[in-house]
Length: 199
Ligand SMILES: [Zn+2]
Ligand SMILES: [Zn+2]
Image (cartoon, rainbow, N blue to C red; front, side, top):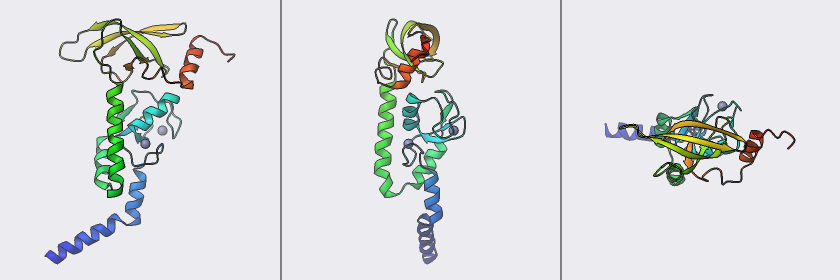
C-alpha cells in the first residue's frame, strides 16, 4: 500500500514536470507581462490578463491588448477559479514573485480607492470615451446600507457633463491618480473634447 502511494506520488511529480504541465503553465501566462497571471481578469472578448497589467494598458488604449476589441472598465470581470488553479500550479521558483505582484496589485487597488468623499472634492473620473478627466463631487447621496452615490461633474476642455456613480465605482479615483500622469491618451482626450482635429 505504502509502496503504491510512493509510486503514485512519483508519478504525480513526473506529471508536474512533464511537457504537458509546462504547456498548461504557459497557458496561464499574461500576454502583457509574460509572467504567471496575478489576479486574473477576463474581458468581454474572452481574453485573460493580470488585473494590474490590463488597467495599466487601459490607461493608454481602450482596446484589448490581444484582439483590439474595444473594452471598458465595466467590461472585464475577475476570474477566481483561474486564480485558484494558477495558485495550485505555482512552482517554488514562481511563488516569491507571484506574491510580490499580488501585494503590488492590492496596493494599486487601495491607492485607487476614493477615501472620505465629500461635496466639493476634486476627483478623477472616467468619461464615456474611457478617458480619465478631472471631476468634482457636486452631491453625495446617502444610499442607506449600500454605498453612497456621488453626483459627479466632469470637466474636460469645453466638454462637461454629469454622472451619478457609486462611491466604490471603478470609474472614480483620487484627484490626479490618473490625470496627473503624462499619458498621451489624456492629452488626446482633451484635444478631442475641444474638437481640434488639426493636431
Ligand atoms: Zn500581467
Ligand atoms: Zn481580446
